Structures are given as C-alpha cells and as structure tokens.
Amino acid sequence: MTLIVTPVPVLSDNYAWILRDSTDGTIAVVDPGEAAPVERALADGGRLDLILLTHHHADHTGGVEALRARFGAKVAGPASEAYRMPAFDLALNDGDAIAVGSVRGEVRATPGHANGHLSYILFDEPAPLLFSGDALFSLGCGRIIEGTAEQLHESLHRYDDLPDTTQVYAGHEYTAGNARFALSEDSDNVALKARAAEVERLRAAGRPTLPITLGEERATNPFLRAPDAAAFAGLRARKDRF
Image (cartoon, rainbow, N blue to C red; front, top):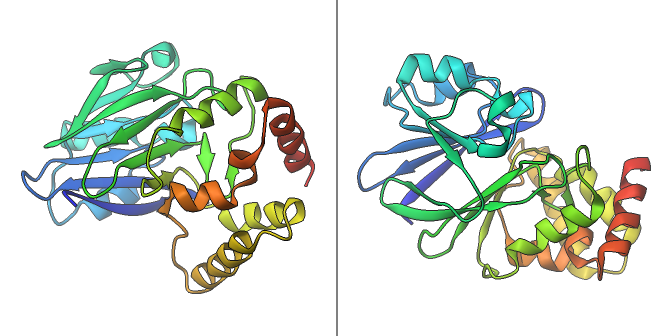
C-alpha cells in the first residue's frame, strides 16, 4: 500500500483522515473539522500539501483556514459548494481526476446528505480507498438534510463498480449506534451479528471501527442492501426515529 492512512478524531465523533504517500512524502487530509488535532498529528513532519473536503458542513471544514495558514496546503472541494466553503485552489466536479502524491483517483458526486457532496476514490494497491464523508457510514448512511432519499440511494450505488476489497473511510464514528438499528431491521443476518460484536469489542478498547471493507458493508449495511429507493426511504425514515 502506497498511502498510509491515519484516523484523527476531531470534535465529538468526527474523523479527519491523514494520508501520507510513502514514496514521495506527500501529505493530505480529508475533512479536518478542527485544526488542533490535525496539527498535533502532523507535528513530526511539519508538512501538509492538500486538504480534501467532501461537503460544506462545519464539522468537516472547521479546521481549514488554520491549517492553510500554518502549512500553505492547497484546498480542494465541491465546485457547487464554493459559495459557502473556504476558498478553493481546486474546485472539483463529478468525474474529475485527483491525486495524492503518486496515487491517482477520481471524484464522484454523491448528493443526498448535502447537495454538493463528493466522495473521493484513490486507486491504491492492493485495494482502492473510498473517502465517503457523510454519504456512507459503516452500517449506515447520512441523514437526508438537503437532498432526497432517492438521491442518496442513487449516490450509494455509485460505488457499485468498486471491488469488495475497497477500504471505506467515513466521516464519523457512528458504527455502534448504526449496528443497533441494523440489527433491529435484519436480526437474522449472521455477518451483521458478527460485525456488531466486533464493533462492541473495538469501541470497548477505544479503537476506531473504520476502515471497513466495502464487501463487509454490502453484506451487513441495511442501506446498501435495500432493494430499491422506496425501501431505502423507509429505512432512512425509521432510522431517523430510532
């Protein structure tokens, strides 16, 4: 694997993800909701080259200006959200190419939670890395704030061409709560029960539940398993009341 990915807990339950290219030293961060924890994580190298933003919400962007001022990092994010986000050096649209050091990737529009939401896919070896922001969570998905259930359902299926080995890095540590809801919907799912037990062990040890493979999510996440948009919308409504 060329990219070394480190979770940085920020705020109450967010993750910023630091990516280091082991071949050329490039360092990027995805969704720095606050600056200080990221700065501490970077203290050994004193370098930050790129900030990737998935959407405009403050818990994903709050640290941008301080990090840019300290490190001179370039900022990239959704072009359609530029009017309500920190100034971009790279305004990105669906299908655009991106890179972190030597690792190439692409941008995919994944609206539903936020209108301009983007996901970032980096084609590292041996498996791609998916930074899904607040579109896809482990055992869950984002709340529908600006879009529709149909949009978010379609967005999650924009990952369908990615292999099961894809590593999913989401924007929040919501997995334990998501597991409880998922079990209420799919209590006979053996893979889900095993994942829920694993999540309980990880959280008891103070460890992140991410990354997780996309294959495991396909086997356990009720939102990825919904047969159509109507079923998805019903699930999302029940989760909102859970």
